[in-house]
Length: 332
Ligand code: KG4
Ligand code: ZN
Image (tube, rainbow, N blue to C red; front, side, top):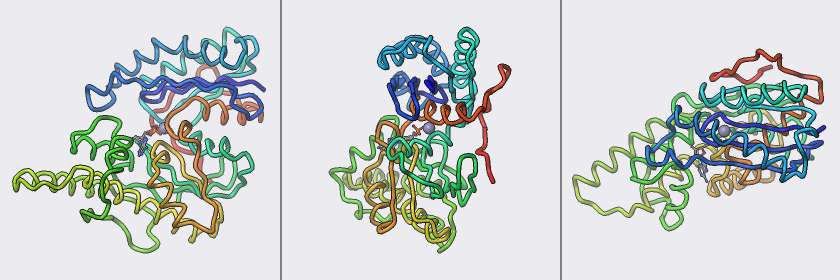
């Protein structure tokens, strides 16, 4: 089956073609226009998707050496995300599907992030524990099968990616903050400043990052008023370490609690090299997988891949399906 995937939940326009579980092409347009505002402006994001979608679909098809007539179905992100940006993708997908008389399926963006791990290792088997870390989500899932997920823990306030984005802003770095902090941390020392690690009571699988962000804010205010000169790379490295330590520790606890031997990490923050090595250290000898870096942040390939699984099992969305900015994962 040949499926076109369309992703437009936030500020990345992603298009991709998946054929029988293999990604034939994947094109991503990152909207750099938001950098001047220090965060995503929803209205501008919708207009940018609208402006680029047609060309990006053509590019994905031509990179796969296919034409629209070869498509057997279309998968599109239906939520969670920004209502306006989701609508641009869903309306485009519906129009194309109607014109071609092929089925369309609305896909859960968070679920697609988890399934990006099958692109890295098609032999991945259920059950596994997934640490889902993005700009909007920080969750631990026990994944028992397709559509059979149980939530083990989640952030009670900010997501990990959000903590990095807000931290970067406090440090005067650009957006998105995760890669900026990672870059700056390379030349810093991660044990210079002791930032707090919240909810580290054994067995608790929830997260909290808002106190960490506030403590960075106070630290930088103190630095300014006392004219101290802690090097910015040391602050960035210590802050990043505080976020990643908690994530890796709780992934290990989740594996202990469930007795599951395979763990995966997914979402934009999974691109972080410090997180990757901390998870490997914490989990060994258990197996821990990460998607390719290009499939960690938002992309159309994960939508096409998961969409093909659903479409080939007969699932379809009715033509009047709606976007859902707060779409929840199917739970057991
Ligand atoms: O999955 P994603 O692209 O979008 C959402 O679904 O939210 O994740 C975006 C988040 C942002 O907060 C960004 O700062 C973070 O992922 N991120 C990273 C890295 N690359 C992206 N965080 C840490 N290290 C990275 N290399
Ligand atoms: Zn995402």
